[in-house]
Image 1 (cartoon, rainbow, N blue to C red):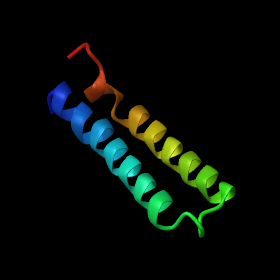
Image 2: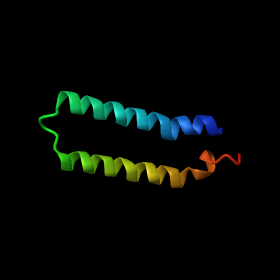
Image 3: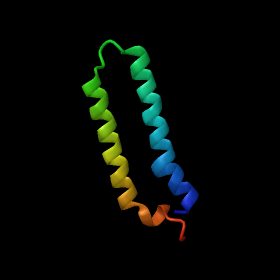
Length: 64
């Protein structure tokens, strides 16, 4: 897979989806969500993205 497509598929789209879900949850269900839930969801997303970066680093590197 070429680098630009890999960046889009593995980084940009997941971040946009997470960001839009975050905004929707905060605007629609702000009374249900507490600080610990937000911290856990951010931490989980960060771990998943770190794993994606580690696994797909060859496709995402600029050396191709």
